[in-house]
Length: 375
Image (cartoon, rainbow, N blue to C red; front, side, top):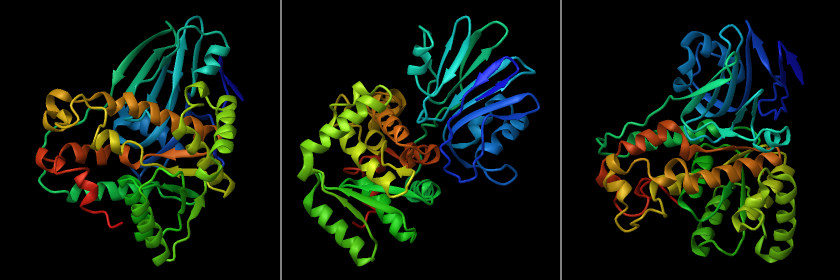
């Protein structure tokens, strides 16, 4: 807890970096509170927390369009009497605010309700909110737009950016969940290829493609890569009861997820991951919504692929199912002290995917991954 000028700040540290960087960071009447990970750029700036204020000083309010990561940022600029609130391109780290007689900002909505705020807003993806502290007024500024020029006729650059998106998120104490899905298989393959001893967890839920899973487990054995199996289906009722209770009791907006099968399985897997000493979870969330969009109005034609300029952004690109599942990962992970990372929502990978020609996007089911998947 820190009181500075007329502001009160509370920060709970999930120490991923092992550097114990205590927040807020205060420099020249600029105050920073921050959650998440920033992966790029490096070079003259320190990575992550200590590089944010130098970015802001050098590049101005829109500095955030020059960084890559999953983050929520609050900057209080006392000299300019402004508060700036930022989230990443897909809003993977939530940030809420309320303005009436007081100004309040929080990672989650519930604490703002608890202190009496009635009108509470969420900072949208790819956007910043500027709050004037002298007039208690705000304005919304969008800082990032994707380019929709579909001019690339091979997968090379797209695969390169996906590999990089996975590699920069694979860190010590990280874990991957393995299913029979393309995204999961690709991440597991990349982890093995990079020879990183990332913990792999397989939840045997009775719902996966048994042939695919057999091949993937054999692949790991052949490479002498250890993995963890969770026998969820064998103890289904007991685990569902335990996880539903935990979600209701401990997870932000838990009532939304307490009866959701995928939420309960995720909660159980993350609990096991935490017990192994991991605090980073690499998820394939976003791959379905970007490359397939199961909920598209015309699933056979996949209009968002064939008429990108008129159909973008489709409902599940930023919001819809993508938003619901991102929030589910963040909130359950947050309750357990685990940071979720999203390589399939990396801004550079997504940009390269959108720039693929329509033909390359539509050669069957998830052709980008299928062409490069070995298991």
